[in-house]
Image 1 (cartoon, protein in one colour):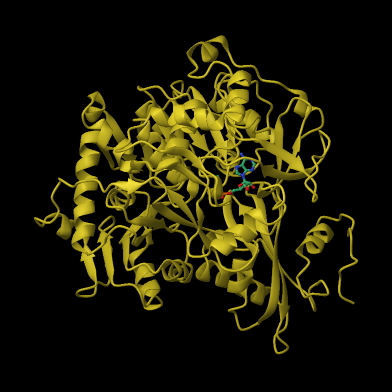
Image 2 (cartoon, rainbow, N blue to C red):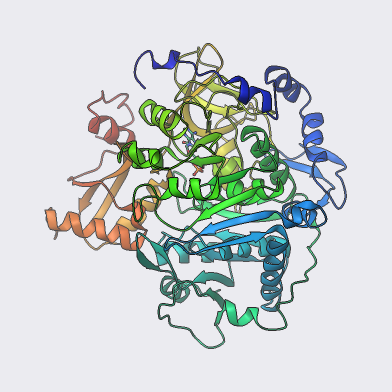
Length: 631
Ligand code: WTA
């Protein structure tokens, strides 16, 4: 952010204000903090329930908060079932376009049929309530159907991002004890087929619990299928078991809806657990209020369903709100840099939600690409995943939004389930600030002792109050949930976000970035521990340290300092080999920007790698406190 830029205020137009779902923030925010249970009960009243709650919030066992205790529900009741009896039944639920240009649409009625069929197929494979089904797929409608089908029968889905390697996939299958995986032969990306079933085959060899694989035919490439283990989806769908009638399983509010693996500072990726009740209420109300959803809207969240943004704001929030959602399979610049803008025009998209990396990526092709398409249907824009720099904000606002569309810069995390800091369309905007807390969230920027730092100074962002979208725990590891998020401010009972932030004199929050060893590359979340673990599998590596350094396009890029085993010598070739190793064994997004060789890594006396020191040295900043460093 340039100096002085923070002062620029973008006021909403009268038109935006007139049609806003929420016309006033301050009073409602105060009310939501003052009477959170009443506020959230009012939100929950807008959804359907099999049985309503006895208690809005059960705080008896912190940090394991339970929302809507005693209630019976299933997210599918709200995302699909309740739309069947109303006029929404014939409304488009999904508009999908494949990268080669093929397209399909589904009404809410058709969505129900597809999901019910998939659900019956899963049941016939012995999947039942409480099981975990792994999903590793391209961005095709069946990915959505698979997720929703799991939820419908009370099984939890664990979607693994399609860019991860077979080893990363196997780690996640094994941690979740998953028996069934759903995949496709492949998908299209930049005009090429990306193989997926072959990756799953390799992962299955490393996964003793894996019994069944269901494969959707997307590309028609040759794939290896094994008897009694592998089934084509279209074959199963043609059998009588795949009936289009399926009862939705009645769940407790805090029953598990899905697992989503995410990287932290230490150890292997952990799975956050989200639930049916609280998550339904939170995703629906945040989506409706922040994106000002109207029944006639066509809404496009251009994230990948493999990450939390896709779960909350492609799939669940929008479907609960009965929106028409857009889904696109491929690259934003294929075959030309106006692929997105063409689809905005073709389908009449009103709301576009994406990441700063995607915006910067499209910005570099210039204004003529959006300008040659009629994108005047756009009413609101959104950004997520990393701080947005002023240049990207201004381009998005001026060129894509034609100076008229407010930009909803939404700050949140896999753990939070939904927006925690975000503007409403009526909020005056400051480029680069996610603005103010969403209703019901009490936030502060504090020092290590938990004391609030003065306005304008950097500190740690904490959330002081529970909110319905919060993860319930870490799958099979409640201790890790406590240690990672609740230990640091245990005395106060606050949630530690892991982000550094500032608050300005107007109460606006400015996110600076992670203050732990989580690395956000192009908005994708990776952990230094997982990167270093995969590095260590290469025979040349004794040990290594991964840090994030600023990058023009990606926001951050991975930089690795590596110590070689004694029989290896640093070379350009080895550096290249290690980069390819990272791509193959973790995924393309994990390819380091640079690898530097060193004789030793700086460590504390207790043996912890001082990544902070590597980072400040790479940035030419002062070393800071070195008192804990080993000799
Ligand atoms: C970062 C993504 C600045 C932040 C939804 C957070 C952001 C991490 C923003 C979570 C934003 C997300 N401005 N930073 N609007 N949104 N972040 O779990 O560092 O993939 O802690 O969830 O992304 O990443 P995750």
